[in-house]
Image (cartoon, rainbow, N blue to C red; front, side, top):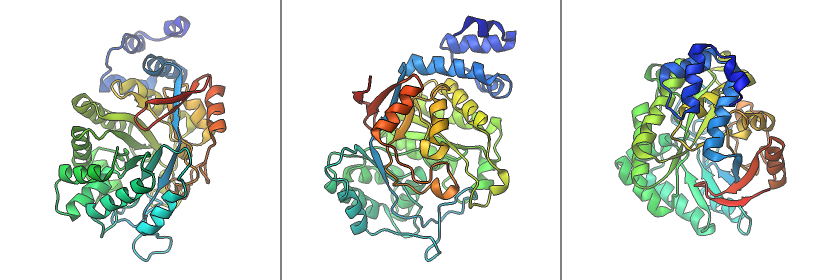
Length: 370
């Protein structure tokens, strides 16, 4: 770390910075000080130090597409711009044949991952989703399938009268390779009751991921930030993820998801600034010392800010997407037609002074772009 910058810190701040530099775990109180008191430039230096200790200058991406089977959902999350009820205007519900046709359109392309998430449909059980995975796998047998949030899995298991482990095993047997991190939102139980009162609760979300990890199904994890939560709420969320990772070591990446205010019932909350986005990435990188990757999901935050985030602890930009997701588009994200070519994504990474690495879904390197 820059000794000149370190020398400008107060004694209290220097003690925390020294812990980070000496690879010591910070606690929740210290994380709160990072959020509230540290200059953004110092946070960036510390987060980049941790990032390069773990991942050097490598910055990862993959070639992926999204399949969103339905936006019909039983839940009534105040922050959601995506979900609809059956027969409501704007609702969709693709058949297995339509999903197979979409998968077929990517045969003989170079995608390595299909990401499947959608609404929590009231009538579909784990048996339907196992059939869906198998159908996609039949069309794209070499492609990694990352599918279904904990909220989706909890409901489909309950609908089929199966416990979580049995439901996950059924999905794995059908071809599920990993699960994404969506549906975590914010773990504080009181706040969760306000913003997503009928959704899979914190305990259930964590248990889905715990059982997945026990079955050797890796996963990612997320937070929804920038709405009505406090720094304390964010740190509590990070602490619960860090504790589960200590237990299972099954999380590949942490993805902070910025609340977008268009077309939902929480628009009054507004949106946080870019400075706050970068502060959140940096503290997350410093605090989550046991999760190897921090991802900036560029369709949500925009390409320009994603590039800046690479200097604040982020080492992954997700993937090429190929304009196959509507979740953040419908909430007013910066990217209305999310798609990036390999040339564009590698150029963005190089312009940030980092080394682009094409990866597979479990962060094995496919190609390093010098």
